[in-house]
Length: 326
Length: 202
Image (cartoon, rainbow over all chains, first blue to last red; front, top):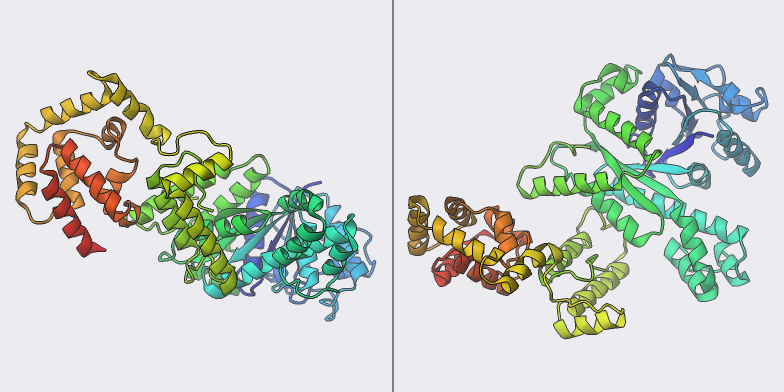
């Protein structure tokens, strides 16, 4: 089985589909077999990034059993090693996916034979979005350096964590009181910390188990649309806060420089790195793809810390780098 | 809470404290929306308590004992301690004496003499002035840190005007005084000259 990486972030319009498309292109360019799955079921448009106005097959065909396996619903993108499973063929009511169909999609995604499966998720923190995010072994959470986007990114990671906690409590041996709290029968549980408090009070011996399971959740932060004046250490600070107050593993994957040509690429309905391969933004995207590929082969934490230290040193010396040199 | 190692120096603890306060500031973009007001207040109380313990010699020793840490918390951090301690214990030929000898020789050259005379007479002393003098004497930052008990990072912070990395006011006075003595300057004048300039900058 290959690596399944979900791309989410809470807020709409921050570049989730843009990032999915371009990371897919770059990973395919490195020789990996990549498939992009459009799981923004209520607002699919991953196909548009490749200039397709409609697709012959997609998630809808798989759900209606027109095809047996999900990989049979894939459409070639014209890029070697890269295919797309679109969802624009689905019903307009597909966003309200029944549980059985959601389960069917998740199981099928896990059986895809590709090296990399990138899941493009919708905005918000609906259960379908959270469950698709959790279906992957690791996730990218994306935000832009604005308060609104960061606020929604925090809500997103907390919602994912709470959802995972509830799943674990429901499917493992916990006392009835803890299970009731996870079932929302008891009031006052609004955040992951509230549920962990309940566990500490009623199932203290299960805390190490929960911590272990939560630590297997891996979030990689990408900051998109980063202007030169933005503090280059912002991503590290966001990740530091998350690591200090949530139990999962958060890493900062890197910044993506703001570029007007991104909009032009979307208007032209072509993948950005296909049109602009030498811009700072393209280099950032290439670095992200390289780092993502390397994370699969071993930790890069030391490298990340070194980059953070360098960025901080530059900032203190009054030389704010235009982009972080990842 | 402060993310410091058990053998962190007072300087490192002060810096970590400032960094944590900045991280949890109510206007910090990276964290303000992560917490509600109550959570932030509780965290800042815990940070304050951690700093109160770690910055108080007796309380820190008690805390270390409760954790079963036996090392001397007021020893210098490893990177500074090794050469510095060797110097104090080693007598003639030690790193500290080598450094003093090098300063004595370096102070004789024309540039260093002129700069030292100018600093002694000037009302204000800047970090850049100290850098020029250090260079004129022919000393590297690493040599000074290895041969003296000045904390790691102090000299770059002074020279490059990284005010946020400087120690607290009292420690700054004391460190500056010792640094000026090491450079064979009129320590009182240098301290008051620098602090006068520094207070205009921050």
